[in-house]
Image 1 (cartoon, rainbow, N blue to C red):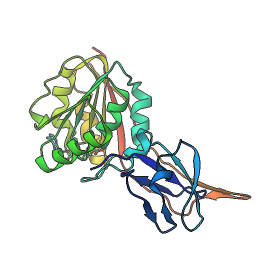
Image 2: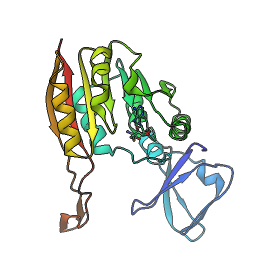
Image 3: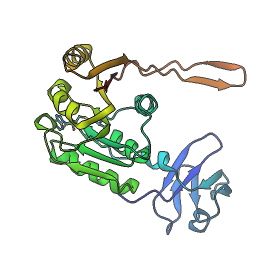
Length: 246
Ligand code: SAH
């Protein structure tokens, strides 16, 4: 996958992702000349049909929105809660499983020092490697391993699970975490949450902090027509936060 080199945005907020700066860019709004694609960030350029667009360089989040998705990825609202509740930062060592499309581990790698992600399936691992390269992330290691069989890392600040049976890796997580480190498990259904949390609190030193569901309601704001959007995402998953306290 070629990296995203520039973004074009219309006054209504419609975004186009430019991967090739050596050809004119064609869209339903007409084409933008290649010389215009190389202009300074914030320059307004015109398509051949006279539509205005602003050109600028992408940030991490612009490219992130274009990663390849194989299995269902964890949404931004849930990633935000993981980052905020655990305070993961540029000094942190993170372990993640399963990697899936690599969405969560890529986002974590953008804020952490180092991320190690475990994935069983070669096809998903291949998607992840493409996404790491596409986002230019060098601080992620992917292990083609079953996390239910063990975690190699020690003194880990944060472990994230997006697994069908996260309770199968609890003992390994406890051993890998540093004292004060967090374990966050993302599960779509409540029986998974119950089995996971009930098993976790039986482990000496593991404390259940909380289980939450993040509901995001987007609003339309257009002059005095200010109201919630009619459509919203009803459910994604539950987040359970645990901490190793001794
Ligand atoms: N959080 C990911 C999506 C994970 S989907 C994202 O945001 O992109 C769940 C993944 O877990 C699948 O790819 C599946 O192959 C993997 N998986 C399931 N059991 C596993 C195990 N025991 N060890 C490692 N990976 C596992």
